[in-house]
Length: 131
Image 1 (spheres, helix red, strand yellow):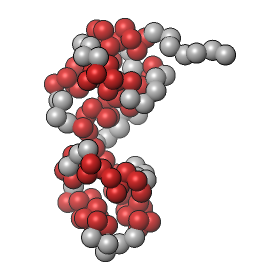
Image 2 (cartoon, one colour):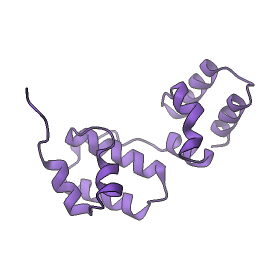
Image 3 (cartoon, helix red, strand yellow):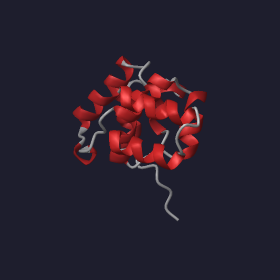
Image 4 (cartoon, helix red, strand yellow):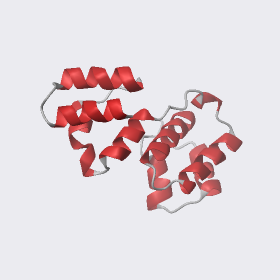
């Protein structure tokens, strides 16, 4: 994604405005990027990783994810632990599907060290607090 890279680099070098950059990224990827993310991504990932994350196609049929598909998405995360793009794409779809807060998958995989079957069990638990 040479075009996407150039847009981001131009923004970082003050050649173009945020509004121009935000619109250009949307036209290329179909995703909106807020100013904070654009100015701070480098604190947690490389430019190449950021571009890959923006460029990857989202999982649009997340509501149709069943146990087999969920297991496959989790296995894909474990096979690609170095790929923020795959981790974030799969994480977003799974968290939407199971109604979990953003970051739930990261916590279960990286902090709690759970494996696919255990993560799926946790995702299926109703953890909502009803007032």
